[in-house]
Image 1 (tube, each protein chain N blue to C red):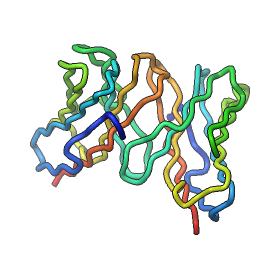
Image 2: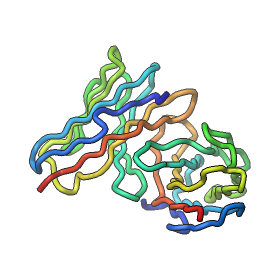
Image 3: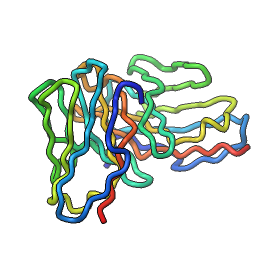
Image 4: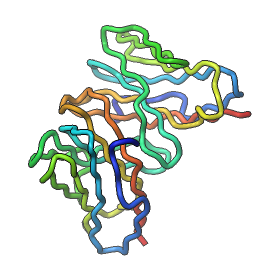
Length: 114
Length: 109
């Protein structure tokens, strides 16, 4: 997990509330990614950013928002519009925006909606 | 549907045995990557094999790629209890990296 931190590790939210997940990297990587993982499943791409002040929707962006104001930070907001937000969220980064670069992952945040 | 699909979904072997996992994909690729995930943790990159390579080794890991069959295999030799994890292949589709649903490997002592 070295170089990428995610906080908090566990997060509980009431229905109807927005919540922001933190992702910070000190690897000087240009590209950052957010994935969602459901039990026994693979990863699905929510949003990605190839450079500061720019980001693109992934396969399941509805109900989520991101910002990339600094190179080292890529926070993810889970809004009340996300109908089934309980999941494990993983942040990753890669050296360059080329899509086939190795990705480095954070330890993840487990979000539970009560 | 997924670009990469791992097979089997779950695998349980005795410690010391070899473990083989397979990945099939649908479209042409530049490379294919294998990742490992311990329960409740982030993914760790294991190995990347390019489309012009047929085989690659890293320690006890051996990866093969057959572009004509659009498939790759990951072999872990002399398995250890610490190899217990989920293993994912990742390929590119439409300028995004797509992860398969993974193979859950359990090593019995």
